[in-house]
Length: 256
Image (cartoon, rainbow, N blue to C red; front, side, top):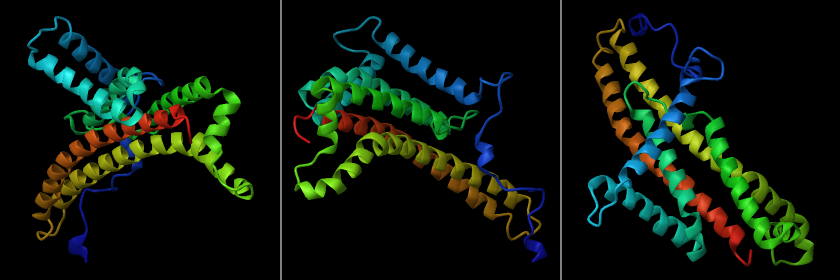
């Protein structure tokens, strides 16, 4: 058994490894810096792409138009309907911002997504929550929207069971699950990359010669998971945007 003891590995990676240190002051962390960087990259790219639009678009303009067109037609219009076109700028901004933030998880020297910290997905979910509550109250009125959100066409004796469930779903579970889904996927992906990367070094430093070659397998898993993480980054940005559109479609519908 002594041959299987790993050397120079005082402790395995833990949840604390995901939190970067503060940058001089308490309120400024690398997560905050990455968020500002993601926002700046999205703004600068679209401003530069549309600074001098061409009839025959350049590659930058084509990509910007394709991203916006995808969200406008494939999410806003398909999910919400024609009325959803007015939400296309918000949905496209949400998609691009989350996508860039998620991709940071595989960028060298960054290698962590700000969305792996629960506070940032929660803030985005809160923005969506406020938006669809505002649209619901605007369309149906305060009492009308409450009834629209919690009342189902069912026998009166079932309402004692259905109303609390619908209220919990509409006003608690929707924003909470929206944030948790994004956070959990990005957090889990980061931890997996961390475990296999550090696991490779731990196996390389093992006293047993049998374990040393397995470090290559661990690093190969890291490379494979990096490509998988890119897919998850895009998918989670799309899912968050799609669910936002779905919630907006629900509050704008004339019937429950």
